[in-house]
Image (cartoon, rainbow, N blue to C red; front, side, top):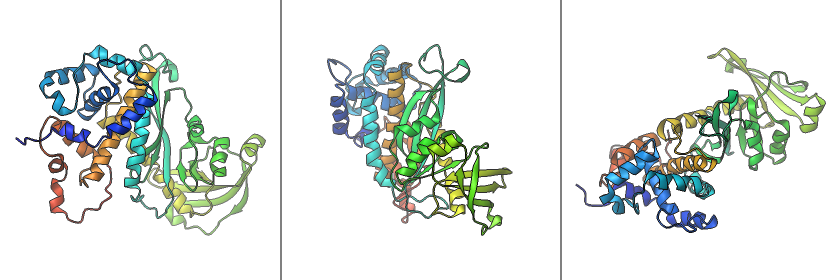
Length: 387
């Protein structure tokens, strides 16, 4: 057996503890803490995510069983379930959120060169959507959803160049999707892709005023006058119309007083006519349709994290515990994405998660685990698809 470090310890070498401690100090996370400090709490929950353990009990049980290895794994000590649970309940979730945003700022530039399918544009392209996690309303009394059920929403702004989250907001299930538009500042020249739930003309006009662009689906009862129409379109591509319009309902026009562009596209595969609403008059009508098609990358992202990270089964039920749990899940995703880029691994993030999960207590060098295939392909691109 290789006599070096355990794989989990090697993974922790990619996590900047100095930056983490800055977040801890910002929110006094270790104030009057005697046993389980914030770093040890993070490492144990990170271990649970990486090895797909479904509960705090499983995390504590596994770490206790390997108590002789904990020091070499980078874990100070094992604790009982109640201690870890209290830490999740009481330690400010913003510690982990701030560290998550630090990781975003570190990982995002590494994937900035990734291309977007069927598009040749230099703009940053973001998809905005939310995913719902079902919970028991009896346990999560704060997380009210539809039909008297419990639900937690994770609103995510995903950078499509590399599928790296840019912004995350965790709320109860009744929080309307369009309200998430008020929580971040639009980036100049960026393009935001959204579905019908985000048609809020006041918020869309704010994006327009920031000299950014949006592409969304138009709601069926929208009233407008056609100002101009482009008749020079190729209907064999699926395009049907390309119009410049002005809203006619006084309230809507008061919220969005400028021109909008309406592009109709027929989806032959699903036999559906799609109507896109945008403030982008520079891209071609077909590019507008292709932009919206790429919005589905965020659906793939949500599906991936639900299948590969522990998010559907929560480790706590208070607001603080839920937000701590979900932010550590996002941190795990970002750390693995960072390792993938640093080692120039040919494996996807999914494959890396599988390898690290079963190898956490092994002593094989991590580069040998994740880079073995590179010897057969000398032309592997530096920027690789996450999925």
